[in-house]
Length: 290
Image (cartoon, rainbow, N blue to C red):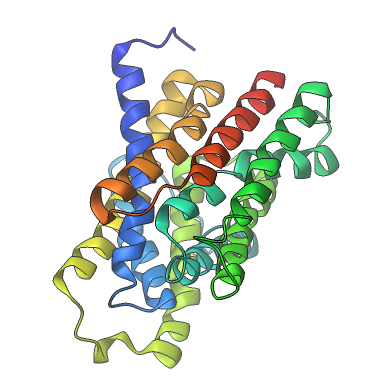
């Protein structure tokens, strides 16, 4: 991999901003849409740029090949479940808290990696990082001003959504020899298929009269935060490698907190600030240990 230049760092920052912007847009989307509808529209619109790229690059989509059950399983665990859980949780929790809670993904993946891979075992720095990061989350849950008995379970659901991403990532190792675009396109197709009957029977969005801002946000979540973000991630991975791309983890909770304040005027308490710092430091130690 080549030495990153200014453009590479610029694109990495753009990727972090796009993913961080998802949280306040989810909040806006919940003003009009239910969590299943938000999940469905995210994967539907997200599939469009990915499948167009596959068509342009003549990459075969294997969604219905002999490995279809892997794509379907990963589509459910890595897209359907977390998109639903996050949207459901953000209805009752500030979106800046969701950004911090979701940023625990590198910490959770380190724990699962220790048990399910051969070369990702705990060491001193990883252990320190995990303890610091999750201590910040525990401290965040003690903020009674923002998390109380009314939304405590919603915050836990967002954490569960973060864990789903990690489990989906571990399962993706089963088909790691396939092209990234093929895997992403295939799991988006299966996520859409899974969500069609759910959204039709449970929420029936065609009966809604959504607000304009909610409609714009949910389309943005699909096309930009899901589809275009994955394509940008592919570009960074191919050109600069996984280690460089993984630095986006430091920026997402920071940008997510800032954007939520700018666009939604969400409260940033002292405990939110301390938790944010703890999570970023925890991620730093975990990644440095790798």
